[in-house]
Length: 107
Image: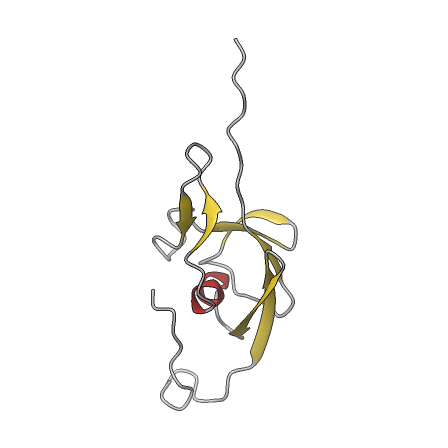
């Protein structure tokens, strides 16, 4: 998925000026436009990863971009496990990256 926007004059699907929005990602403001997914806003702001795997802590971000892989899950306005590629960003959304450690196994 490209982290760029078409100039509004070149976008035949939306020929009008887009409405700017702002979301907060881990306490940092990120700018986007109405209609963008949260993943789109994150990519456009230069972030490539926003989650860590439970086992190795490896960085994860957008992989499939169609809601199949769950690599892009984030917490949005307190709701956990939101797929950033499937959720439209709304002005004022508070997004937190997710990292869950594996539970301890006791015998």
